[in-house]
Length: 234
Image (cartoon, rainbow, N blue to C red; front, side, top):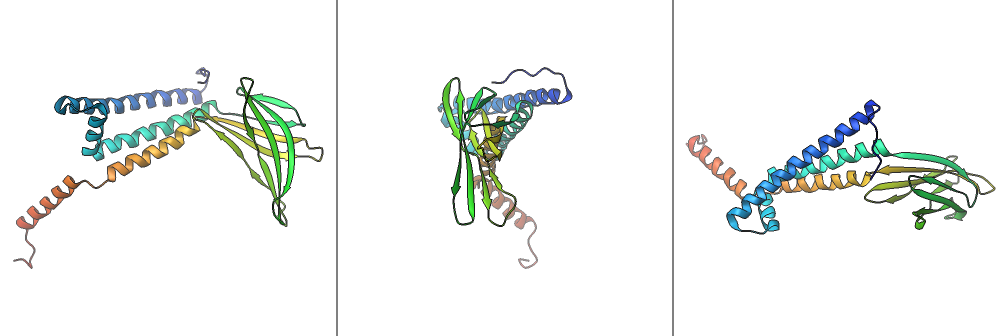
């Protein structure tokens, strides 16, 4: 997906170490799922999906914890990837001018002013994004101006894919409709979001009430009451 970064600095060494650790942890977790599923299939002649579901559901805390760790691995990999391979640029463009960043060709097409309300004015830049010579997306970063406020509010436009996020910011503009555009390309951001959802899913499985566990707790409580009756019962 991205060029191999030479090990020339401490940060790059940390990045590679993080990726290696993530691969190792993920492999160990998948092996645990594989072993449990294969054992279940051998004993009960179930399908792969059925055996995996049964093993996970009957051992919620254990396999729910594994799922949480999968989510954590994705988050750490996403952080390492975005830090190592992220890039950004800032360009001042006239109408019709273009620039390239990480395989994207971005063309500044127009600047539009809209009176959104009686107190808010929106200044919107239209940016055409091409990749491999084909139209890929159109970004509309903007600035919002409110009456009585000196500082405008910037609204970022974002294109999110599984591979990377493309952020566009309208940093400044002039009366001749030229504009200063900031663009950030951050890879593997979606991995972090996906990891968060997986952690939530694994936590839900781990905390799901287990009837067998509840019965065991009740049995233990009854045995304790029999061995150590309360003074009222005596």
